[in-house]
Image 1 (cartoon, one colour):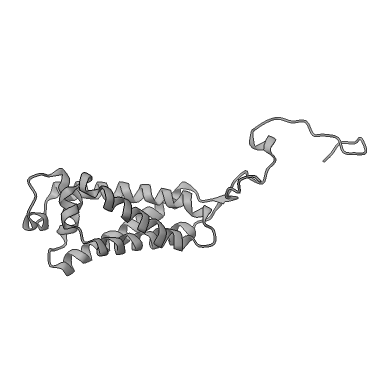
Image 2: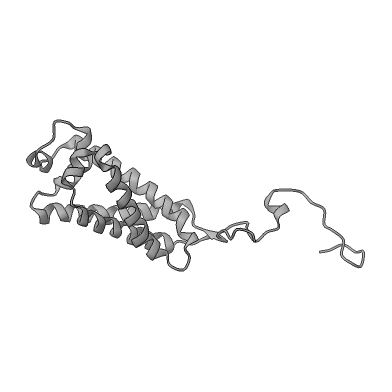
Amino acid sequence: HRARLPLEIYPVSAGVKGGLAGGVAMAVLAMLYGILSGHGIWYPINLLSVGFFPGIRTTEQIAAFHASSLILATMIHLVTSLLVGLLYGVALPMFPRHPILFGGVIAPILWSGLLHSVLDVINPVMNQRIDWPWFVISQIAFGVVAGIVVSRQERIATWQPLPLAVREGMEVQEAPDEKGGDRR
């Protein structure tokens, strides 16, 4: 039995588009959390980057506007969203029947569990102040939006159905057919 690899894949641009769209959805939910929690719109933004700024520790400091924190948090969020979007572009063809189940539920829960286990080392202040249910909801929103955007992109055929010699780039001579003539 040979491995059944995807016969079609998404282009890299699909992962980029999915990551950006999912990142916007997650950012909107994070800012909505900041407003609904009473901490303000800057709270979730600063919370993402507060590990890099040891002087910012109190809730009032985290809730205030800091230009350097905004720039750093934007870069962290953008790079992470793009990388996860690219991961979705690679992974979703392996789940062709249920891309939203994988992208919208399984991957966000796995990612949230991974972050929950290492966040104390990465960003202790964020670990102390994060609202995990809201965070998981934001991750699921990212996954659903990114999964939808990626799965709606046009797929590119792989070389899987081609003979092994063609896939390996070998130049082979056509074998004659049974009657001794050339096979066309």
